[in-house]
Length: 323
Image (cartoon, rainbow, N blue to C red; front, side, top):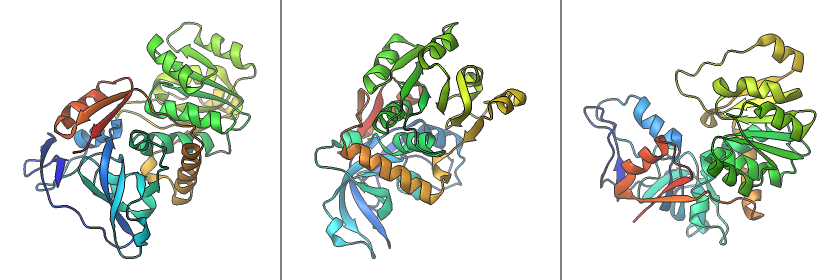
C-alpha cells in the first residue's frame, strides 16, 4: 500500500511517500480502507518532538474515515463494508496517512450514511477532546460555557457539542473577524476578540454571573481573562500547550472562586470516560449537530505541505485525500 512515513536509520522527521506492507488486523482489530485522513496539531508535534529509535518508521495521523475491509479474530465479519471514523490510529501503531490502517474494533466508530467522510475525519481528536472538556465535571446543560480559540478544530466541536447538549450561553474568544464568523456559524451566542482591552467586560456583560465551564486552548495566555469572568465553582479544562508554556497560578484567587483547574491529554483519558465521549460524539453526529470547518485538501504526496499548514495555524480543517 501507499503510505506517508517518517523515521529511518538517522531518525529523520521528514515525510515521504512510499510503498509499505499492508497491515493485517489482529485479535479484536479491524482494517480500514482510508478515504480521508485528518491532520491535527498533535500529528506534526509528535513527528517533530518524539525521538525515534534508529530503524523505526512511523505512519502519522490519528484521525480518519473510510470503510472496514477486513476484521481480525473476535470481530464480527458483519462489520466488513461498514463506514467508520477512527481515532488514535497512529497511537495504536498504524496512522491514517496511508491507504489502510488497523485499529482496535472499538476505535472504528460507525459513520451514518448521510455523514460525509470529511466529517468523519474531522472528529477523533477534536470532538473527543471537546466532549471530555465539556463533560468531565458533569453535563454542560444549562451552564455558561466559554470556548477559547472558537474557530479552531477543538473549539468548533466544543461550540457545537455544547449547543446540542443544552448549554445556556456559549461564549467564544477569537483573534480575527474571520475567526469570529466561524465561531458564530458554529453556534456561539457571544464572540469576543480576546485581544480587546475590555474583553472581560464584554463577556461579563453578556453572561452576568460568570462562566461555569472553560474549554481552554492556551492556559498560560488566557488564565487572567478566565479568572476575570469565572463564576463560583467554575471548571477550567486545559487541553493544549507547547513545551515552554508556563501558567502562573494566583492560588488565592482560585481558592476564592472554589475553582477547579483541570488538565487533559486524550491519549490518557480513562477508558470509561473515553467511551462516554465517543457515545456523545456519535449521538451528535446522528443528530446532524456536527459540521466541518472550511476544508483545506491535500493529496497524500502533499502530506508535508499539509502538516506545515497545520503548524502555521491554517484557519479551517486540513485533510488528506487518499488514492
